[in-house]
Length: 71
Image (tube, rainbow, N blue to C red):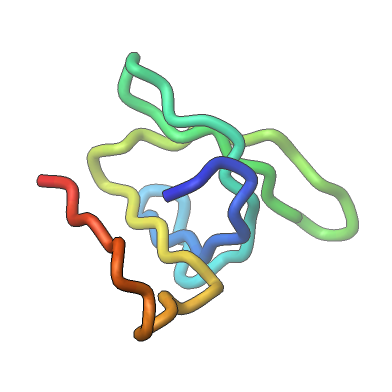
């Protein structure tokens, strides 16, 4: 997933179920850095990679040939 991608966030600890945000960084220390809106303000949030699911808001282009799957 590219940085600065609009995402939906699912995290049980924070009670996030489809919370919208923007992925800023994926840290080698085990967390995602995401901008999230809480109320009327945007907050920089650090979420553990374990227990957090990020889903890109933009669907993949089905005609794209050079798709690569990371494992």
